[in-house]
Length: 503
Image 1 (cartoon, one colour):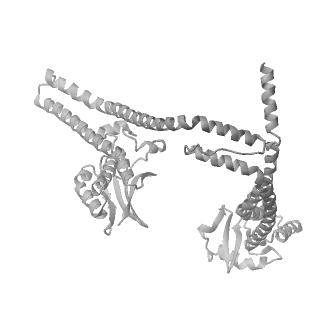
Image 2 (cartoon, one colour):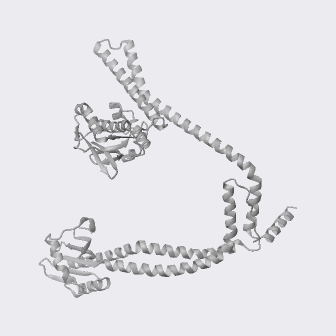
Image 3 (cartoon, helix red, strand yellow):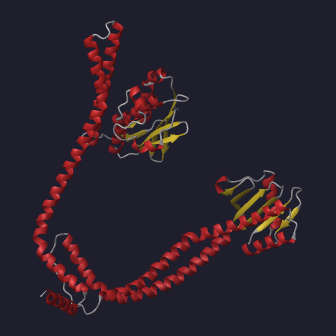
């Protein structure tokens, strides 16, 4: 019975499939020709010029090594040396001029090498200087650069070997550009002709093949939008017709169930994602807070028990115990306040008030108010006389960002004990930077600086009472205002910065 059922289904399939879609679609590969032509033209356009330039550079370097070897072996006066350079100059259109330590000509190419004598003396005497922006290669014996003489560009190399031999050589770049243009033009014309011919063939061949596929595409697009009214009709009797019949059956059977299931699934997915997000944030918050409060609570408990048990009866010790308890309680209070602020920012409960204010006045006022703190730590604050910069931002939150950067700089300032505050205009933006001298931040720690409770040096952070939340507040504030912020390492310190829009 199973064999008879299989044979019956196979016969039904063969009756419907009279023309294999596999054979029809094999003709579409003719379109690969167009893709290959376009790819070759693109590669030719993008990289042929650079390839020619690299080739010219290799040729000049080859001529340089020929001169260098001849100078080391004292064979630059031989006919073999001159013949080798003549071949290079004639084949690759390179002009060469070589002279010895006594300024005597040892070789000058037939195609204009004598014209380079004055330019070589100009480099030797310092009359002609290098343009650092156009230097392509440099060694103790040579300089390879692109130069412009009149209206023409050249690839030029000059130098002086340790044997006293001086040389200069150059080749025009314009010929490279012209060759690239000609090659690209020819390839574009021939490729265009091939593409037109291939497109005409594909247009006629694929017209019949793609018509039912487009019908199925339209039906499937309607099904994506939960519209099951459209049905496939075809008479090609191939695999596409079978697919169309199956889609019709699928459309009829799923129309009602998919509509109800999709609605319920969307609501359920939203609820699940919202619950998972809240649970994850709650777990992370509780874990971090528990970890951060564990040390100050233990200290408060220990010193309070010491006072209760009268471990030290003298007034000085009791005052010390009380000061530690108050200091730890103050740190806990500060951290809780910062966590509440960060929580409001992350959940979007804190409204951002965009207003126009003088950023220069804000920065100067805060620096002036922090003079006592910087003097106590022996820190020199370096600023400039800035013009007023009016910006659009939340003034209170901007001051919070600058305060976190500045206090962070004070706590980590080392070396020369300097803090440099900068205001730099960049088109329609103003960048505020706070730089402090000291040890750079480890590179692997830079991506984690903006995470809650992350501390590069936990012992040092504990020493000045840091909570590891300040830079997280900076991140939340700047993202709430849709502005950029960041940190950069320097050899002698660290720079934190943020940008605001000029009003």
